[in-house]
Length: 116
Length: 111
Image (cartoon, rainbow over all chains, first blue to last red; front, side, top):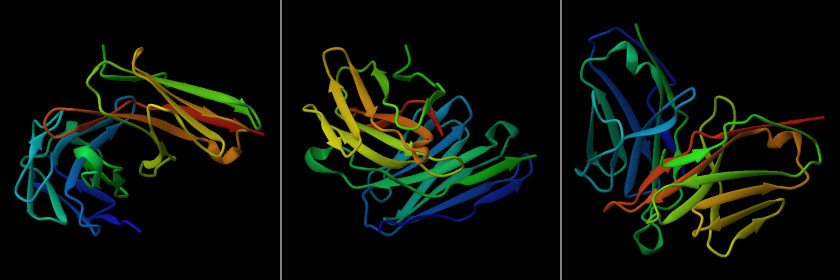
């Protein structure tokens, strides 16, 4: 069974703090993703990575950065947390799939981040 | 026009009913299509991939219409346990095949 784990289920931080969200997958997947999910807005892609040390911006990268030093680990960093970054953060991983297409994504349980 | 659009619902149906959802996408170069299911306070999980020829998995049937740029999901003989949010996912080609999620359609199956 594919397992994607996230470092925390719930996190409360203060405005201006630096926040690290960690994600680890155990299936040797090439692709890893960070999303945030907000009511009425659905899942929005923040960043993704298709290989170690590679990263690409998603639809809403502003205020975030990422790090992928090892294949199994993908970190999301909020350099200076703000209240509008209060959200559910979901990490996912996938293999390349056939023909280079993204294969099934497997999600972690999510981290509910509250920024006060 | 949003890249991937779904009717948010909720669709409120009795047990045993047949219900269909549609999802439209704007990028004609989209490559891969999926339906995911998300239970309340849980992470999304793959329900089924959607192929050009259509595919069926038990009570679930998915169809792709490239000409009209939509995918559909049909659920027959609805069960209480089918109550969830159904997310449409379209993967666009942008060098790295980026997945885009629709906002989801809520289904409530009642006794």
